[in-house]
Image (cartoon, rainbow, N blue to C red; front, side, top):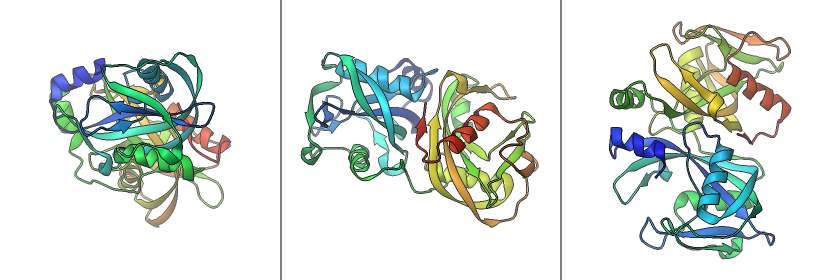
Length: 318
């Protein structure tokens, strides 16, 4: 276990929580993928290198650290395969800990190192041709391998929403104001003139995209849809995963003292209904802006918009 998860579990026990992971689809010079037979699950489970995000890490640093620890290889991520966070990929570990994943899968190439096996977690590891992959793959790993072979655009789970909004208050009651890695999503909504929809935030008086924290049972696309409707009154259709970002510069302390590192999924979206109206609490005003004449924005929201405009194919990560 990582230091972060050891601390978190000491506070919340085995209850289900949302955790951020990075997974490597690691190719050798023949194009084969490295699979591992895991020691922490029964039934001859095979999987892919990777693990949990630590406080202060980016997904890139996480996948590099975990891959080196588990396999002995230095790697460089080259492409996002997708973001896997659906409840169908929920995990119950042998010790009883329950998790809803927020897992970024990255295709990587080897840049150095020597192969070795972390015997505390891995029984054996081997490169397999994709047409001859191990049979005992958990569903999230099987989905990653499928998408590696079949998709050119990054995968994201279909929208699922949870309007109960009870996850974070229950978690905060157990951990107080301590730093948490929280998962969230936002919607970059453009009109037919190419303008971006921004809301004036009530907490910091800066402009940003509709955004919020992910609830248990949701998918990131569902979070983006729910938050957009709650904050600005619009129903949207999510069309593309622009990027997934986190790191030491994605931290925030809210006015109530709660500290977070945000692992955020940013989606392109289009309006399909509703009435444009700020909620008056989280969002004080809402307007369409020319992308060349933007108001003062939340820095991470501005960065996501700049990446969306610079890389229209999506799939950005950090």
